[in-house]
Every structure is written in structure tokens, then in C-alpha cells.
Amino acid sequence: MSQMKPILCVGNTVIDFVTITQSYPKEDTDRRCLDGFWQRGGNASNVCTVLRALGSKVDFFGMLSKSVAFRALLEDLRQREIGTKHCPETEKDPPFSSIILAQDSGTRTIIHCNKNYPEPTFEDFSQIDLSQYGWVHFEARNPTQVSKMIQSIREHNKKTCQRITISLDFETRYDQNLQLCQHCDIVVFSKELAAQKGWETAQETVEGLAADITGDGERPVIICPWGSEGAVCLDANGNFHKVAAYKPEKIVDTLGAGDTFMAGFIYATFVDQRDLTDAIDFANRVASHKISEYGYDHVTKIIKI
Ligand code: FRU
Image (cartoon, rainbow, N blue to C red; front, side, top):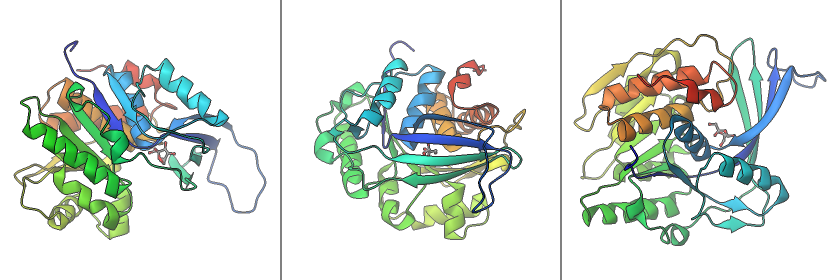
């Protein structure tokens, strides 16, 4: 494992303000919460956190900020030894999310505020020496720039025997981000976006997405976590698999469960070299462990059997 190349995660890092309530609040009422905390969030940023907790070497690539509010996020990245050396910087305030964790239902409700925060460009990405990485993970956003980043990895892969695996976390803006899928090796698609598409089952979702992915190259593996039902996937040959979920001891904090699944899958595939369904099984296990406590630190305690 010491020879293992690091993983690069490309996307956003934001401030999450988390409020814990007994039940979801009624509109236009004034009440106290049970507790609260803030933490570094954002999909790619959370994937970095969980990968580090599992013991991987990982770098983050996204827009950093010079604002005072961002210093706490930088400090957290530094403490966890998540590399940021290639990241561009802006003067603008970072994006943030206001999150309600309702204890009775176990839901997490996210209201995200982005304020047109700048995105890294392909030019920023092109400064990176790709040969140092073994896996590059993307959050599906900023498609014009990200598709160029993905293309450059594919070009890199043609020239080397140490191929970089490309994964994509597809959670928002179906029509805009769909174009990113065809050039990736693995696409993880969210249940929430499936609902927006009107897809009612996990199988309908992976098959629906596969039918929409055009291009005549190899098709990506498509994975869809489906909450307490587990996760399904269509492998590169189009074969369908279903992997059962783990029942968590208790449901405490579902914020970032999808990001945790993603990180668990990358870890199991890349670091542990597990096969597809075994890696999904591990991802299910890490995600179920994550939701049993607040935050991500307890992920370090998972036993990697
Ligand atoms: C969870 C999350 C949060 C963030 C939100 C929007 O998946 O990454 O940490 O606030 O989604 O990026």
C-alpha cells in the first residue's frame, strides 16, 4: 500500500452549518435546536475526508478562498493531510450549506448557497502532473471545464501503461452533466436525481442512464445507491447486479452518506483491489457505519474485513 499512488478528488469544498432538531421545524415558528456543529463539506471534499479516514493518500482540487471564513476549512484540510497544492484561489467568500438533521425521521435537509462561486478551469487543471495519481474522481459540475479535464486524462492514459481510473459522482443537473458520463470508467448516480427524472427503482435508474449515455466507446460502470435497499450496478458489459445494504445500529447523521459510499467504493476498488460487487458491498458497509454517528471521524474505526 505504501507504493500506492494518491487519489485526486475534483469538486467543491463548502462550509456546512448543521443544526440538530427533534423533528423537522414547522414553517414560521421560533424554536431551539438540540445541538449543532459546523464542518467542512462539499461532495468531493467529503470524499477526500472519508478516503483519508480509511487510510488513503488523497489530494483535493477545487477553488480555495482567501476569505477569513475559509481559514477554518484550510486548517481542517491541513490537519487531515489532504493535499491542496494544485488548487486555485479566489477572494470570494466560500459557498455554504444550512443543514437540518431531524432526529425522529433521520432526514438531512440541505439548503445550499453557492453565490456563483468561481470554478477551477481546465487551465488550472492542466498544471497538474497527472502521472502522480492512480485515480481521479470528479463531482459532476462545471461540465465545460470538467469534460476537458476528463479528456486530458484519457489522452494521458493512451500514453502510459499506468492507467488512471476516472470516476464521476452524478448528483445534480441531469441535462447539463450527462455529457460527462461517457468518458468515465465509473459513474455513481444519486437516488435523488433519479426521482427528478421520474425513475422509480434502482434498476430503472441504471438502465435509464445507460440508455441516455451516447458515444461508441466502452460504456462506464453505472452504480446507484438506493438507501436502505442497498445499491445496484450495471457492469461494463451491461450485466445487472444488486448488492444488499447493511442495517445501521442507529440512524444519527445521514449527511454525506452518498459521499461516504463513493469514498468506500474508490478505496475498496483502488486500494484493496476488490472486484465490482465486493467493492459495492464495502461501500454499503462504510456508508451504513457513517450514518450511525455524527460527522466522519468514526469512519477510521471501521474494520476493513
Ligand atoms: C453532502 C454535501 C454537503 C454539502 C452539500 C452540497 O453530500 O456535500 O457537505 O453541503 O452536499 O455540496
